[in-house]
Image (cartoon, rainbow, N blue to C red):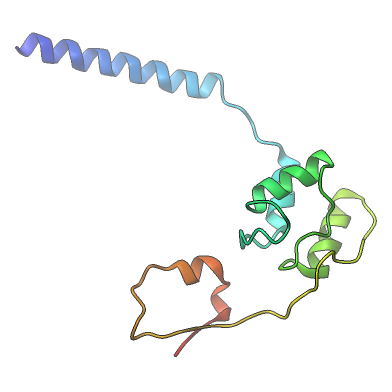
Length: 128
């Protein structure tokens, strides 16, 4: 019984070591330009650009499949920063730029899930 446990533990250690080595040896580096583009985007994951999140939109911009003016939450400031980064011409925002919103939290019904903090900048959240 003990020998079976020892064999299983040894097998787990060997396989773990192999997986660790493979993760280092075969690691795929991300595109640094996609990282820079994504850093400029507002990270609201709202989908207003037609992509499911900021990362897919950044990848599409990098591949030339999407224009830099599709992000309403980023506004014209975001378009300007993307144009500067990529050396492209500044274009007018595709959608209407909306003023920044403020979230009001009803502390009586708040369950502490932190979704409001993840969706909004901290300075836009106001306790009721």
